[in-house]
Image (tube, rainbow, N blue to C red):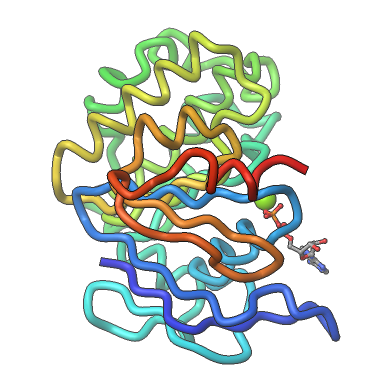
Length: 231
Ligand SMILES: Nc1ncnc2c1ncn2[C@@H]1O[C@H](COP(=O)(O)OP(=O)(O)O)[C@@H](O)[C@H]1O
Ligand SMILES: [Mg+2]
């Protein structure tokens, strides 16, 4: 389980996270919603160690990780699918997947067959350059690359952004299958309400650097959530 407690993050004088608390248990999908600029990506970057926090704690599998470097968090099973995908355009699909090996012990440096079961299109594209893939294919590659690291916490930042409906459906099915395995905590940032509602076991809504609503999917009241999504 991931436990974020009272986290404060600043960019210079700008107070981007104002005492954020959040939990993401294994075997569940936790959806984080909120408009542009409210701090969702900042929170993910704090969990990953890409931004230093000023106050608060970040617990993972019972240990405090807030002071650890990013590679050590990756080694402890935290995988990331960044907003905008960040596929390496000049590397092939296979090479993009192999970048996930960096924090793995030598004997685990293989691409699990499961990845091609989840994303069959990638199997036929291993020699293609990442930059030649469509947006939807790149998003599948970005998720696959994170899965190569064998994450026990999978963090996805707006995986449906700019993606066509058929691929959104595929990504939804993949996330559901991963959650059903029961050994992975999934933290999903979304602005697309229906996608979040259909997948979420738990949810949190952020506004201006704070969590303003949170609970189980059963407690999720559409009108209250939407109030913090529309401008
Ligand atoms: N590297 C940065 N330096 C300064 N300000 C930043 C930086 N990254 C994000 N911000 C600001 O922090 C706030 C939260 O941004 P972000 O976490 O990206 O929000 P979201 O992911 O919810 O759209 C925004 O006002 C944004 O402009
Ligand atoms: Mg963002």
